[in-house]
Length: 213
Ligand SMILES: N[C@@H](CCC(=O)N[C@@H](CS)C(=O)NCC(=O)O)C(=O)O
Image 1 (cartoon, rainbow, N blue to C red):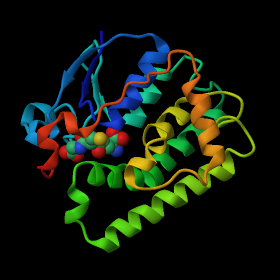
Image 2 (cartoon, protein in one colour):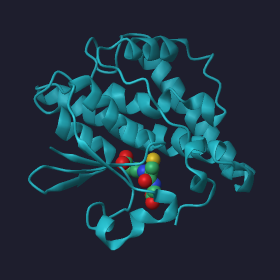
Image 3 (cartoon, helix red, strand yellow):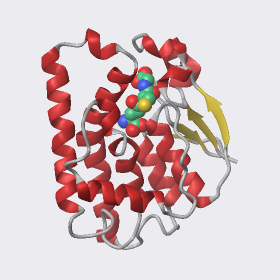
Image 4 (cartoon, rainbow, N blue to C red):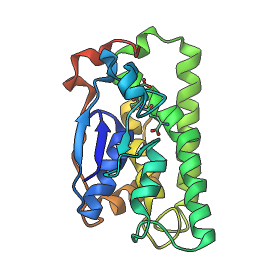
């Protein structure tokens, strides 16, 4: 059985939990207390060189990190990853979009707002992240006007990845009311068989108020 290195409030970790839930697949979990510095210990850096979660140890001992790469690995051969060359490239397009336009804006801002760190950040930086998050939602809203899921008719890991932070934008202080197509897509994602409804606030970890080491 695989081992998932995880931290419960992480929406990057949630992406993997969501896919495993759709697949009905179990794995061992090892929690990494990222705000206490567990990610920076040599034994964990040998699993993920960045010290971040999630990471996956395969049952043969090989290790893989970066949430979107892990999604691709676990989805191989399932209905959640297309078999054709163009479909796979489209998934890669949206996974890159997620990392650059969603995770880097909504993900960061949400972390700062939910843990009180926003008060310690320059206003210009907060404004930049908020504008970036809105832009990502505008892009999604336009794209999702024409089809039910990011690739078309089929729900894939592209949707799971973008959903993880995309559906929590309100927790970053970005109102979602103007994005009706995104809201309808969120409802469609929630209706998928095996959907995982459980997410965890940073408040469960008292160390999360501190900066990452
Ligand atoms: N691009 C990475 C980002 C991972 C990431 O930033 N994880 C956060 C939790 S959501 C973390 O572990 N941060 C601790 C650190 O960077 O040291 C991915 O998609 O997996």
